[in-house]
Amino acid sequence: MARLTLQALEKTYPGGTKALDGFDLDVAEGELIAVVGPSGCGKTTLLRLIAGLDRPTAGRILLDGRTLDGVSPRDRNVAMVFQGHALYPHLTAFGNIAFPLKLRGGVRAEIERRVRETARLLGIERLLDRKPRQLSGGEQQRVALGRAIVRDPACFLLDEPLSNLDPRLRDELRRELKVLQRRLRTTTVYVTHDQQEALTLGERVVVMRAGRIQQVGSPSEVYHHPANGFVAGFIGSPGTSFLKGRLVKDAGRLWFEHGAQRLAVAPWAAAELSSQCDTAVVLGVRPDAFLQTPHGGETGNELRAVVESVEFYGDVFHAHLNVEGSILVARMAARRQVAIGSNAVLCVDLDRVHFFEAAPGSEEPGRNLCATLEPRRQQVAHLI
Ligand SMILES: Nc1ncnc2c1ncn2[C@@H]1O[C@H](COP(=O)(O)OP(=O)(O)OP(=O)(O)O)[C@@H](O)[C@H]1O
Ligand SMILES: [Mg+2]
Image (tube, helix red, strand yellow):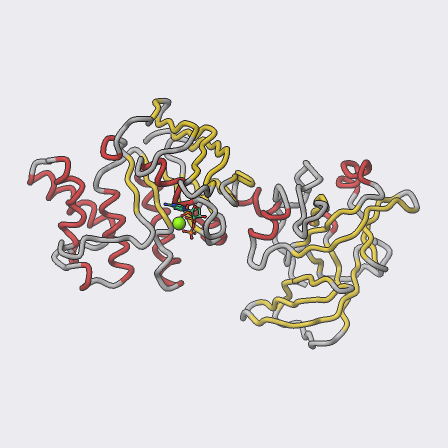
């Protein structure tokens, strides 16, 4: 177990691509942290720097407070499972798992004992004599994990280790991996472009984009209190929908106006947003932030919309709703009848919407204007 510290890490490739920029992160001893972001945002680069396969342009990497600068990959005591999990094709599963131990020059009987113990942990004892081509994708994945685990490293670096598996197997292996990590308590940085995977796996989640951290927090924090419009849109399936509008004061209340419609701002949010009155903002609403029963308009939580399309997911629908030219996605109970082209009145849970800066010259909403976590953020999702 080890504590991993990244300080002002920066990586610019020879061609000029800045893959990491001002990256600061502290991973606690034994923590499982999930790093998530779109393709090309610098995730693999980050792991390669920690593993020592590449050198940072600036910044420091510390393991238990000691700098890794100048320490060779072999001596870093970190184990990386690569994207695509390349195994040595000419070696058996046993040979692949034993490889890092042989490289270190261990005693044969001890190597054998550790490989078998690791294989038992991963449920692949009966596969040890097979070559990679005789293994399924999921089995190969387990062997690749075994090769990392067998070294008993201070830190695991996992680069999308489940990405080329079918969804069911991926879910199963992800659960196993989480249990295994709990047992071993090895500090782990798990990289994925799949936000769902990051939320289900990570004790904390790091959302990154274009080499920069956008937010670090518990899965619940990044879901319920996104730091900015990017995180709100990226996290969640589907992500947050946005409505452009203005904040206005009327009849002693703060309102969000979108075209001819308006929503009341919850009192706790209004207290923080009063200085933003008469400015353009972007409202963010998650598919599950709608209430079941209309309240007759008095509470200022209704939006009128036209149903544009509906996606059936078995237990729920996702309805795409046109609100004066902007599309909102709402999760609806499957029993509800929703006809395409029909009018719908939506009841928004005013405690669960977000207000983002309307960044000038950008289509994407900026930072979250409320610092407070909404009071009801832990509530179970409503289905309308
Ligand atoms: N060796 C290299 N030389 C030049 N540019 C590179 C090199 N490796 C990566 N890059 C660039 O750096 C950026 C980050 O790449 P990286 O592989 O870290 O992304 P990633 O987040 O792992 O993406 P993916 O999800 O597709 O694996 C990209 O723009 C990529 O094109
Ligand atoms: Mg990558």
